[in-house]
Length: 424
Picture (cartoon, rainbow, N blue to C red):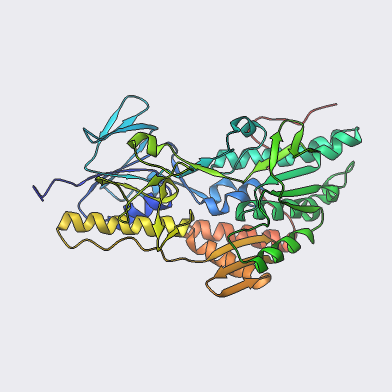
């Protein structure tokens, strides 16, 4: 080390799981940390779909970044949008023209929706990555029932009562499960002109089966459990060829629907473009086993922004993996600052795969251990509550779940953002 003060300006772009974990682990390391994010909150994405489906409020899954680090005098938070990185001068470029110098840069900016070359579908099929996405989907779900109630045209009413979720990973499966419960358990007594139990809920997957990351046995169980909920149709081997305001097209077949949700693919943030670095097909930066950019050891890329391989397998883009990467990068930075021996290459420790299928049904796979049904549902719930930030959030989510379980009612059924039902 040239001087004791060098290398201590750490800039972190992104307040997701990886970025927050790294900052947490750097406490007391003597760094000057600047955290940059274009939103003022950290989001617990694994439960975002429950905001979209009226089970949780937005405040249950998001926390102000400044509040999280209010007592950390070594952390400065900037609400700003990053537009690039000047590697020569070691500065982060901001949309307002500002520049933030760094000695060590950590990019953990997550991922966005990917429509496989059909970005025009985004208008009709929103994805689920932000609070704004969740409230948009919630509004469209609830308005679909309201407009079906107002309609006198049977074909139009059927279109409003048809819901299509594209992509059958955990998010898609979890969305379909709660939409089915919304239609069959929560809403039936509240409408007079329609029976919400007539809703048709489609889970559409281009691959041969749903929950492709799970064993075929658990995948088959999940499909059966969904279809038992009533109104759910699992369509596999059915790639979507078009999405419009009127509906979706699967090959030559057209399905009229007014509510489509996209859960089929993701694209990394433009970090690779900022750095001029090699990226995979999804835009993730190809990093070294130390999670740095090749030939740029002062730049770390973590989480969904990075293509990380461990023992010949790509590390999945899940919260536990991001937190482990944040923890590892902090250890490397601490070792560099103190002149100690650097840790070995990053090693990912899998926490297993989890997905809920709705009330009293979930699947869990951890190595050779496989669970399904209500025991898996309880284990899934306990695991998610454990990873929430703060006692208040854990209590709020637990109480919302208990309330829904006991009463059959969801507490966050508000239509917001100004869109109103049509009056005929």
